[in-house]
Image (cartoon, rainbow, N blue to C red):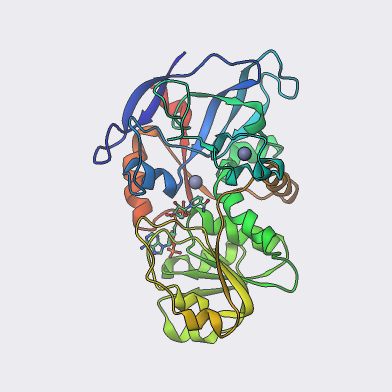
Length: 351
Ligand code: NAP
Ligand code: ZN
Ligand code: ZN
């Protein structure tokens, strides 16, 4: 079926309206009419080929929420009209050790929701800046938030921003008695604050934007540090068990590593296009600190995170945009001017 989408034809081109085709649902497929799609900084990195390897046309978008509009003949778990989500993955091998552990995100043949290999035209996956998507049932998530929360604040940025911060918070056991730092208060960071707080940790936000100081507190931070303020940073030396660093640009990692206690870990989830300057090895050696990375999260933990958020009434703070506002939204995202996630109203693709 031909559907309307928004995408780019080259790294140096703006996004524009496109027509794309979606396959008819196979036996195990769920066809979803997309209501909203969150705008992740990874969309921007990919559209502009900042990570290299982008295939065009590129239709980004991996924070998809919508309603089931058709199901394949072997689908029993989903019905037409169910409210569902799709995150960063649409396929994986489903039998390797990673897939069996429910960590499909680390499968060597994981297929991203966009820019991944597929038999469907045009040979690479096309994401959620589109009217419809067809996805294998294994990669379809249930949305259990109340209807009134959906209308007010669509929970869709949970599908990337939520799970990408949830997974390291859980893996490194953020909870009561733990002091957790979140660096970069954008799409990922604002969810990191909410989730770390709800998990019971003491939460410290680190931002370069003075203007986010008050809001970071409202988002869940017990303390807010403007990271350009050296004296304020020094006050937090050797105080944190875990830091989740979401910053989308290269920066001085030592400034944050030195805030970790003995055996503390800083997890990099921000994925800048060019490398960070190497941190000082002594900053790691001296307190047996660890520097780690983490990529999105597996399907079981994504459902766990969605259900936790539904139970605790956690949604993302969003600014709804029309599809034709996407290029301007990218420019604002580059300036850190997002409070805290742009979300495309996919109904505007039709006009
Ligand atoms: P975002 O909304 O643009 O937030 C990034 C935040 O980092 C900014 O709001 C800003 O917060 C801070 N920042 C400080 N200096 C910056 C600079 N020079 N340029 C840009 N940001 C700067 O981005 P996002 O969607 O949260 O994504 C953050 C990063 O995570 C991106 O690199 C994205 O590709 C990556 N990502 C990784 C995964 C994964 O699986 N590991 C998943 C999704 C996204 P302050 O104003 O508070 O300083
Ligand atoms: Zn993302
Ligand atoms: Zn696998």
